Length: 147
Image (cartoon, rainbow, N blue to C red; front, side, top):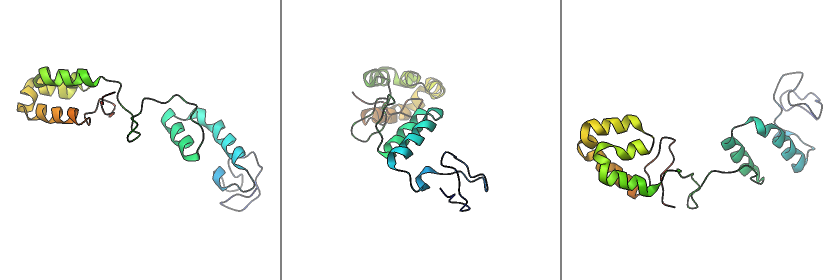
């Protein structure tokens, strides 16, 4: 096979061109069929984070054999493991003291809400709207949604 950088002939099993040092991207390798390319991708996957593996497999149309986190059917975004009902309860009854923010894993803003009575009620009202519209996020940035 030929290197796409310098045109030198490279061994089939090599991932780097010995002449120019270019990394050989398997999508550029002519003469390999889809199964061989997928097999080479599978060899490199264990070294990558789960989210990257999921995206690579999705892009290449490969089966998802890695356990996936809970996802929302509507838009494919991951949902938080936090309870929607508890978040709504904490915001409704103790929101002026930031209880819902502590529950969502946001202790800094929870402490600010505690000292400012929910940012004078405006922050509490904004959070209640976000919770009702299911756009309120936890500490990892995942939306807290109804299940």
